[in-house]
Image (tube, rainbow, N blue to C red; front, top):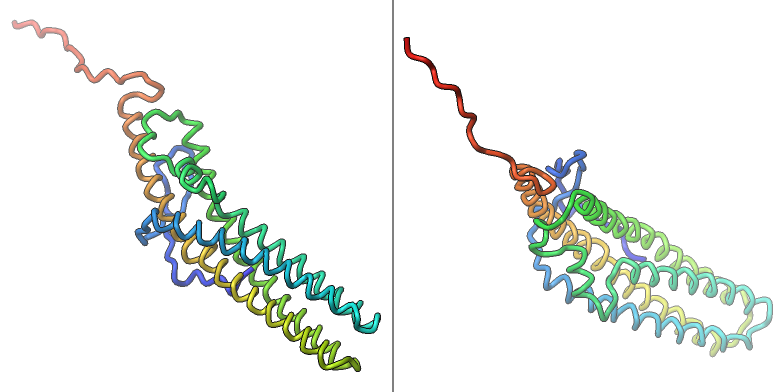
Length: 248
């Protein structure tokens, strides 16, 4: 669901975390405004909803082509049905890596809690590290799948026009199909921009930056626990009393 995923503009360092069990995480060098990320996410979700409405309009337009000869219409309808299915799946993927429109703040804060690390136990640390890595991985995979879907969408459109070129159909029907293709082109462009913004430059970089900031805070809290004695047992720092040395 998008153009090529260009990660060249994003710099990631693979660094060993101080979290036990030597988890390796990815840290973004770039500092991201997390408030801006939330706003971008809201915009992306609304754009996805708009695209869904446009796909419904395109589906209705394709139905109006039923006046074409059955052999021609059947081929074109089959192409567009496949296209619609893949584009709808792409929208589902986008919404899957974004937050619920009404719960952006709460969901983001759950994933990256602020100032709560001192009260967490060992297993909770592990859960958060796993969630952060999964968030990054899912966004990257969806971005790569999107590239393939958008390329196929363009191929569908070209094939539909090729079928019409080989058929003796009325000019009005050709123009109607051309209009449908133009709408699909607009939808594809919107999806490309949406997913590139959500899944690559903004989403992955911002998620990595948030992960890095929280990883450092979590690691610091964990280190403090080690110094104090993990599990609530305070380490005894009292010096050892040596026995008196008898003077001869």
